[in-house]
Image (cartoon, rainbow, N blue to C red; front, side, top):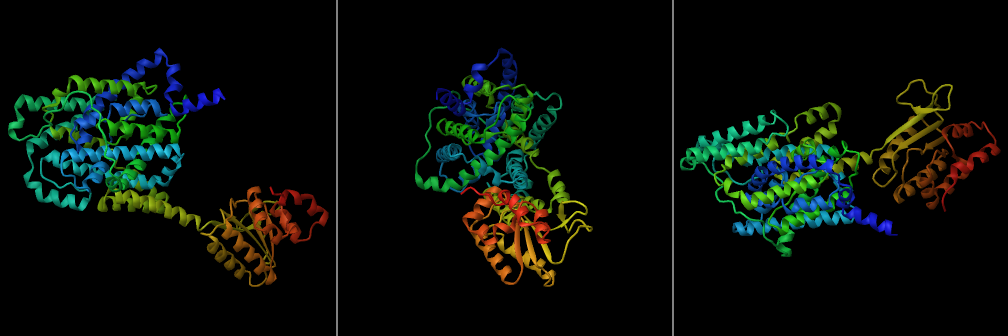
Length: 582
């Protein structure tokens, strides 16, 4: 019992799994990764907070307590949690719809959103609902991510060019506004932004651990301070409050919760999908631990609770930071703890250094980060390999671009479900014939030399028989029966690929058997799986078909049709064909 309790505690607090076994040799990799990612987080956190519509300091607050909480509750040892571009944009889009009256109210909404995201993710983890993310298919995530990356990029144009643009998540509105204001470009600001983009984009080629975003920040600050560029109209971050984040409280107004709930659900699902995808990719390179989807939800939920109560905003695992964390040698989540300590030191002693940081540099950080999210290869690949998945990707992409982030992800989920339902409602069905000289049966549509007879129809249904597909199955069977031109004497159902049957399927199958037999067509079954036999038994289908018409395989069914063996032979194999759990 004590062993079981200990295992349960370790399951809920994964840090207890690795911390007691922590070795001195792990510290070097964790220290290197923690410092590298911490340095990345400073400009990224500030840039993403600005993208979310908040003061840059809240991006730094979002990588203190949340990082520590994920380190305790998360199962991935390399995942770097914090603000990401996608969630930041979703936060801005969700709160903008509430029309906050002041920056203080905006912050309350951001804290409340983080709390709701934490509540949803933590609740999903406790209820073991990690599988829900499977409803976001890869083409949907790909189309959504590419469209959102474009919207994020366009949202930063106002900081890069220092022009007035509306806060919108619709590409058509943003393009019109950019066209109307393109004559007001502040070229000096644009020049600083381009310098930042070049440093960040090509600095990585010097070395994978090269802190390109931080170098861009330093260069930007040096240019503004050295040449007094604020006097020439370059917009800067200005005063950044120092000190640790104080305790904050989200609102518990049910009305506001109701308005934030749709975007909170979107962030919860998208954030978890993004986080778990990168965590799985990295974990495949490390065989010393296992990921748990439900515990990951709990870990991310706790991180978002930390953001809600310590002046942050919704967080999740990020692609680029996690890759850097792993490449820099992270062995455990001690690396995240070290990153959090570096951010704390920055908050205590170094925030004053960011006074002259140009907003254009933060825009450059976001632009470079999201440029890699636009995937051109996958649509081309799907066009050649799977047209239906290509259509789903393009539909999600276009809907997200034109109707907005929230509508896009919901539409993508609905499309995913519709495709699943459509495919399940049209199971593959085959007429079977015997391979000459063998007892093996194959699809008549694929091979021209199979042995078959007009008076015998052998059918295999590949999938469950249930309410959504019974009409399709019946139509197909009716067509095949009609093709036999009244010569048909027996139908043999090969049930080896039928995984389940519901009440509608059972009722319809029973009716079909009775109708066929009335018209002089006998019915047999072969290769029924045990669980399906149990269902058939409960619904009386075994009795309807008859024990002497249920066979172990197609060859025995064919032999029975030819009367090639006697009752004793049938009895010998009958138990294996009809046995059920009563």
